[in-house]
Each structure stands twice: as structure tokens, then as C-alpha cells.
Image (cartoon, rainbow, N blue to C red; front, side, top):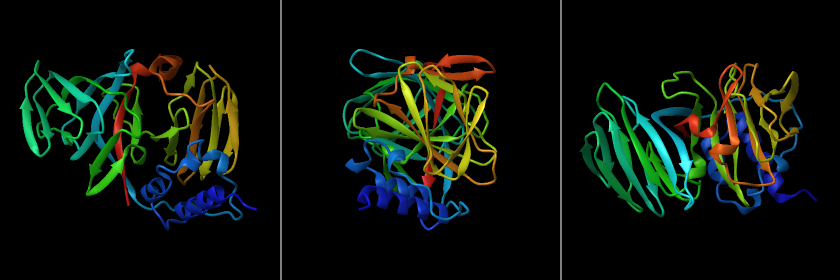
Length: 304
């Protein structure tokens, strides 16, 4: 008898490939489901028929970037960020803790519970759990900040964008090697696991992820939608729906999409564990890897 969780997930992936549902609809359908806390990839089987990927919906880059400088012994994230001109209008809400923001450059615009405050360089604003807030920039120059907030995970933050209420595992992040990187790069969706987090990555045609490696354990790369390649050293391993490949610790890897259609894959730590800036390494320049506290994450929203 077919596993119900596997049957449901494969039907959803069929619908994503055909364009019957959007990627956002897919994320909502698997959000919070305990049967998928051990990962999506292990439930996925190869489609019984070749199909062209026709994704429904779109992706919107927020122009709000952040990097995790450190995680302190209490689990709080110490972050640095930048809000670029024309930043998307979205709000976020913490379920616990607070978001203590220090403006380090420029004139900040921060909306808290419907009221917009202008915060000048050197001043702080503390945002408490339960208050929706948004970073805005109606000017022509970026404004920068440093902040301390409770550890981010998909279950503790809620977002609103384009009249859609989204929990943390329904949005995406684009990884940037520098704050001023303007390249279009793949999107990562961070999901809760039984003992940490794992990620789903969307790689557009002719795009590649930044080469990276992890020093704290193995990762399993699984194809979910479309076809592409997993690059391990000099090896280029075909990656497609229902196929998985183990990557040992400290082995750099890259997901490449040379084809004309989108590729979606899963990166799952094995055994399950939390992402840590000090144990993830990213190629900021050819041959030069930096730790996760040196790269920036841009909020990205998918739409129905």
C-alpha cells in the first residue's frame, strides 16, 4: 500500500510541475505537517511520465538584506542588515521575544503596528513580540542597521505581503555574497525538521547556487521538480525528481540548472540539525570560502 504522505506529496509536485497550483500553494499545503518534518525528498518518487515544468505564480525580491553576525549562548541572533530604496511593503511578526534595532547609517523608516517612526543614525527602536513591523525606504539611499532578536526559525515568525499571511516556512531567501550584490540568484525556503531545519532551493534556468559546504555533518540533496546537476568537485551528477545524493561534510557542492525550465531541490542535513553560521561555508570569490556570518540573505516572497 502506498504511503499516504508520499502519495499526497507526489500529487502536489505533479500539480506544481503542471502549473495547476503555485509554488506558494504547495508550501502552504505542506506547512506544519508532521509527516514532512523528516524532509520532503525521502517521500518523492520519479514522475511516471515526462512533463514540462510550468510554474504558476511569481517571486518578488524585497530589497531587505540581513546577515547573521553571531548566535549568542541564549540563542539570540545578532544581525546586520540594509534596507534598499524601493523596499517591498511587507510586515513581520514575532511570536516571542523582541527585535532590538540600532540604526547605523541613514534615516530609517520602521512601521510598528500601523504607525511609522523615523529613526535617525545612532538611535534604537525595540519591537516586542505580537507587534507587526515593517522596514521601509522611500528615499534614494540605503539605510543600515544592527539588531538582536530571538533565534529565527520558521515557526516563530509570521509575514504579510500582498494581502497574504505567511508563516516562516512559506517565504524564501536569496543568498548574497556581499551586501551590494545585484545578481539574480536562487531562492532558499527554510523548513523545520524534527531536530533543526532543512531547505528547499528554487534554481531558475541558467542559474547556479553559490558553491558551499558544511563542516558539521552530511547533507542529502534530493530532486523535487525539474532536472539539473549536482556538482561535487569535478563530478557533475544528474539531479532529477526522485533522485538523491549524499554529500559528505567539508565537501563543496553546487546545484546547477543548465536547462530551460526551473529546478527545485531539497538540501537536508543528515542527521537533522540546526543551521549554524560558523559551520556553513560559501564561495564569496572563486576559490575563497567564507563562513555563513559573512553572507547576506534577502527576503523573497512567492505569490499565487
